[in-house]
Image (cartoon, rainbow over all chains, first blue to last red; front, side, top):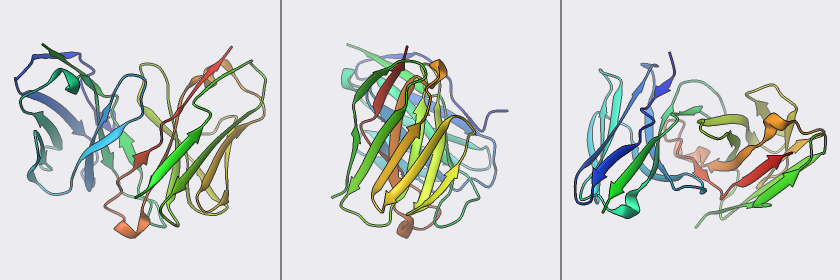
Length: 115
Length: 116
C-alpha cells in the first residue's frame, strides 16, 4: 500500500466549476498535510497546509481533513484555466530528529480547467 | 523574505560524467535542507536531508552524495552519472523553529538533468 495515494487524473472541469482533488494516506500517526501546485516544467508551490480535522479556507481554496478516514481533499471554487496544473498531496509522517519529519508526496493529480 | 536558488537550471551530461548541483537559501538561518528527484511520471523521491552543517542523511542508497559545507548551502554530487539519474532535481528548505509538526517545505526552481 502506498503511503500517500492520489488519482493521477487528468481531472477535467469546466471553467467556473468546483474542482475536487482527493488524497488518502496510510499512517494514522500522520500529523501535517499539505497541498502543492506544480505547473508543467516548474517546481512545486505550497498552496495549503492543514493540521487538524475539518475545513480550512484560503480564497478559492478549501482543504478538508478527516483523520478518522485518513483522507484529505482540496476544493477549488470558481476554477480558472490558470488553475490547470498538477496538485501534489503531501503528508508529514512521524520520525526523525532535529526538527525533521519526513514528508511523503503523492504522485499528483493533473487538473485541466476547460474554458 | 526567504529565497532559494538552484543552479544550473538545465544540464545535459554524458553517462559516466561527474555531477555537481548547488542550492543556496537566503533570508533564514539553520534551515533544514532537502534534495528530491522527480522522474518523469513519478512522484517526488527524497534523496537526502540535512539538519545542520556537515549533517547529511541519505534516504535512498545510490551513486549520489550530498554535502552541506555552509549553513545555507547544499550540494548534490555524483562521481559517475547513470542513465537512470535523469530527472528533475529539487532542493527544498524548512524552518525547524516552526516545530516538528509544522514541516512546511519550500522548493527551489529545480535543475532538469538529462543523462545521455
